[in-house]
Length: 422
Image (cartoon, rainbow, N blue to C red; front, top):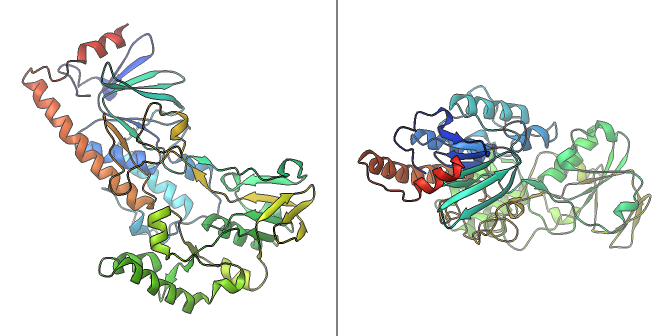
């Protein structure tokens, strides 16, 4: 919604009334992670104010509260930068979790981004009568012409329903609550999931003399993080600009087999579809090996097939084996939270992902936008943020020009202001 004459100087570009209704001049952004911060910064470059609503007490809460201590970026830093401000030059090629959080805090400070913390969005809905979005938290109702969903594809942990897990006497923890293998010292640990998190948790457990048993139910692509001193991801990105995707996939697998050997022989069967094509079609990321594979080959990490059921003292597997287990770690990933709070919107699937595939998933209708749902990491986030800011920036300037010429561009203006004043 445009900034009205006489109002644009108001602090933080919004108005509040006694009935806890807040009129926001500029977009409402839900989520203060990398996606929300990047979009806010790009909007600021377009001279568009915005308001970020964040349910936790800090920016980048997933990184700050739900990641393990040894985490590093899986890709080189040049592929993980947000728009308009890069990483410090002294950061290593693969920044640590704490370095990335530091970068996020510097980013927010640099662009004077001040989210409203502890504002959990309960419901967001488009008001067809007014032509505006109404976003309710536990404290206020915010009203704006634009709504930007920046909660991302990793908002909530996925907790699978595994038969018998309720009767297991040991500890069960999702990787979102896992910090270090120190609390699992010398234990037999069942790690359910073989993605990047599952592999790294197993590697971390080995450092503390635990015996990880990694459940591999499906096929998985494992690639070396680097090939011949270059980032595998960087090599792939360069090659797809010049060659057909299927050819690039074949080349990557040829190099991976040369570097890592045949992973089928250690229980990690590769999918028939190549790693990049699979990522583009399903969003399933290949595992970038940082040392787990050598521990599997040496027997320190045990690869087991799917779990049939959990018992009081361990697990039964689909191949008939039964093992005693001390603890279980669920490396089962995350999911979108959008279906729980965004109502009456057909732009998202039931899983909370945009129906339109990349690169067109960032814009819906009626002033609704999404950022961070590309399944392409921080590169996808940066692309979305730039596109959204340009699009809203054009609308913002049109509205401002109409206001400056005293043209009543927004017939709903008085109606909205009356709601705020009630």
